[in-house]
Length: 218
View (cartoon, rainbow, N blue to C red):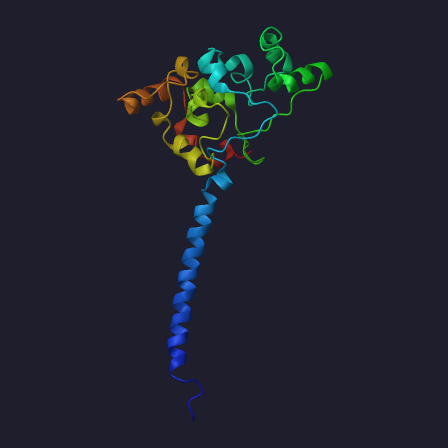
């Protein structure tokens, strides 16, 4: 029986198989790169807002505590956004005619709240409770980064499940004394693991169940 395919087709077939494998590998690498890139995670990308509010100025410059604006962070799942009246407590006295604050003045005059764009926005299938993290000794900067150094707010972490689990599996690496939760400049001690284990026990952190699905997915 005469040969149907020429010998060169063996080489072509091998090259095709190798090429497909390389293409799959490159596609996987490309997807991984895009998935972790700022284009998707939005890390270090300031979010446009109706007013250019600077945490750096208000927190570091003026010494305004986080809880002055985020009033429900210690008792609710949502940290809370300040009503226009909170802003105008100061700005009815200072910078009263600043053009940059015109949206704030209009918000008060029309009795319509400012529509802030969320920077940290978890999917609907993820349950997150601010108050429990604060009570257990997880600092603001652990998740939000050094907000006190941000003229405009951006995401400091991806908030991907893998990132959350790093803390849930080993909370002793991240917890701090409760009185330091709102201290943006706090840094772990050289004995963080040992100190953290004491805090885990002291704050009744049930580390054995933090990796269970229903903790975050309810």
